[in-house]
Image 1 (cartoon, helix red, strand yellow):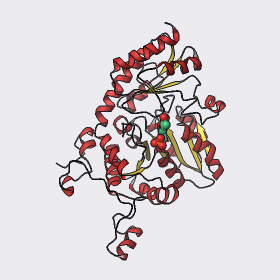
Image 2 (cartoon, helix red, strand yellow):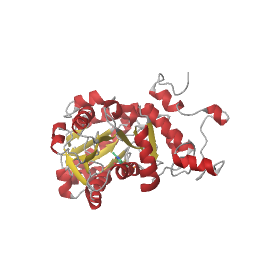
Image 3 (tube, protein in one colour):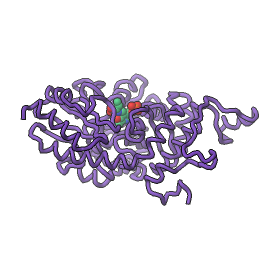
Image 4 (cartoon, helix red, strand yellow):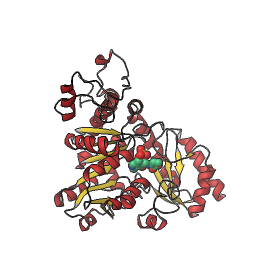
Length: 401
Ligand code: 4LM
């Protein structure tokens, strides 16, 4: 039995895979390779490494042993041939885009995206001659109207940040692949590989902000791409090495490896608490609407059951009093922290329209289905009872119920 054997469960592989302890004097935890550059034994060896005819380290912007171990473990958990780590989720997304798209090429995206991804693809890419088209991915047949021979990349989040709309990964990938040569990239940040594995459903690339659940402790900014070995090598040598330089520090790679050891238990607990809280919010008189795919009232509840192991731990909801009540509610919270980001041990609350999605103009938010009054919760690992008491007191205070 080897620690990377795929017969081991996810939680075992998250702790043991891709680390050869005996090669490191039996150290329980892997060393951090604090080195920007790596010695070649000869000029010929250096040339061979640059030519890609000999494996081995060159320079930590391109490869580093600690980062390489993280990449191998991520690939193992996501069921990918290869992974590539970056200094942020945005670094992963930009490196993919700069590697694949040229002026005149087209990018097809879902209506709802994380604010900075939206800004990159809709506000900045057009300045470089790249056309972005946005359609409603909850209706896969609508994709056909915007897909053409210039489409190089199809990019979407599921669940989408912040409104929890799901896209059917298998349906989208099948449709795109049967009508074009475009690659399908899924930003699976809200899920981590524990909840959803888009490559097994036909996607070509998975994107993660490792900052979120995969690291899980709110102390690192990091990102990753996963896919075929050929594509990852292309992005490594172009996007990462020469176009963005968005490399991950070896210490941050170590911290993500440490966080990942508990990914399975954390996700189980996050999701259990979120389901319990979403059910209570849904029947609270101060709440107008709850968006959580674990609720039967969610329009894509059955899709959630098909493509996600559990419905995740992000909840979006609207209060009866709209945006003003939403802001007052956030300010009344005592245990939840008012902060952007997600997937940490600490429960977080924020207002997308004025925070994570303030990169959208107000009229864009309306077009892109992000309502002004939406409140977003990231359910952490505290006691669900304590979290619910906090939500209740904030709802009561604001609504004098
Ligand atoms: C947030 N999100 O929502 P880095 N993809 C998705 C994301 O939610 C994010 C990124 C990529 C939030 C950050 C402040 C679906 C980020 C970008 O932050 O660059 O690691 O990931 O609160």
